[in-house]
Image 1 (cartoon, rainbow, N blue to C red):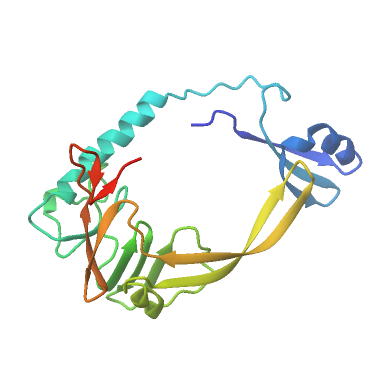
Image 2 (spheres, rainbow, N blue to C red):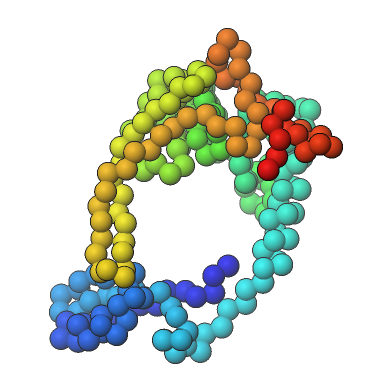
Length: 225
């Protein structure tokens, strides 16, 4: 909902120093193009004059999000199939949807993306998939996709207390000091109970159940702050 968009300028190399000195705090990216430089600035109306206006309405955005959640309840609370995982606009279930729910050309209806042979769902936006044609798809929110994860990595994380650490290189920009730090970062994968209570059988994760809050503001014997 930020109404301050970036703005791009092409500056000759003879004038780049003066430009950088003037807009140093706003420069977010710089690309050399021969004798010129392509500069991307974070727009600040106090520094860069602009006649642009954008229709941004927080209420409309909030309503869209709320109605989307209502729309997804028809898939989350449907006795016709078992739901294994869902996200903002997707579901993983154990049988085809009814025809009236599926149409790739109609807004609000679903379309079939994959038919899976195997799937492991660990937490929101953390999962491993094997399609019927042998394609492997996995996601781990916050971890670069260049960092390889295997099926065994995901299977091992199903056990209570298991963790997996991966190293990844991340760039951190420091505009105030005018430099970029390239640092090795440790990313730890593990099951969490941030949104739902985890269910284990013989110390192996098999599902989740929603938290229930009683009149004393207690969730599964843990008192809310």
